[in-house]
Length: 178
Image (cartoon, rainbow, N blue to C red; front, side):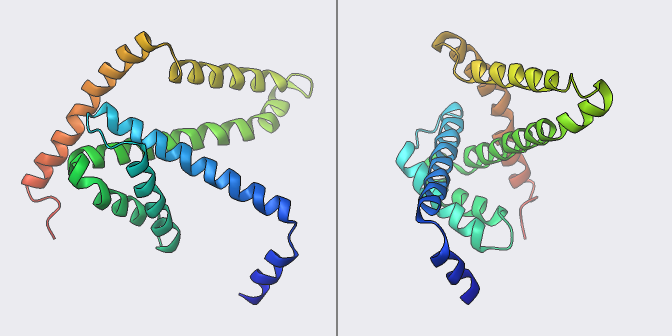
C-alpha cells in the first residue's frame, strides 16, 4: 500500500483528474444505458435511482471477487421498483451488450496486424474504414429518429418480454432455490 500511495502522490494531478472524469463519464453513460434498457421493459425507475444503484453496484463489483456481486447488489436495490424479472432481464441484456462491444473492440484492435499480413502493408487501413462504417451504423441505429426508435423499441420489448417470463417460470420451478 505504501508504494501505491507514493505513486499516487508522485502522479501528475492533471492525469488523475482526467482519469477520474473519464471514469465518472463511463459510469454515467452505463447507468443511462441500463435505465434505458429498463424502460423498454416498462418499469419507470428514473435516471437518478438507476445511477445510485449502478454506482453502489460498481463499488461492490470492485470490492467483491467477481463483478457479478455488483449485479446482484443492483438487482437487490431496484427489485422493488422494477420487479425481479425485469431487473434481471435488463442486467443480463446489459452484460451481453457489453460483451458484444468488448468483442468488437478486440477485433478492431487486432485487425491491423492481421490485415497487414493478409492484404499487405498498404491496405490494412481498409479494415479501419469498415470498422468505422460498422460503428457509424451502430450509432445511427442507436440514435435513430424517434419513429425508427419506437419501432425498434416495440420489437425489442416483445423479444425481451419472454425473458422475465422465463425467469418467473424457473423461479416457480425452484431453479433458484438453495
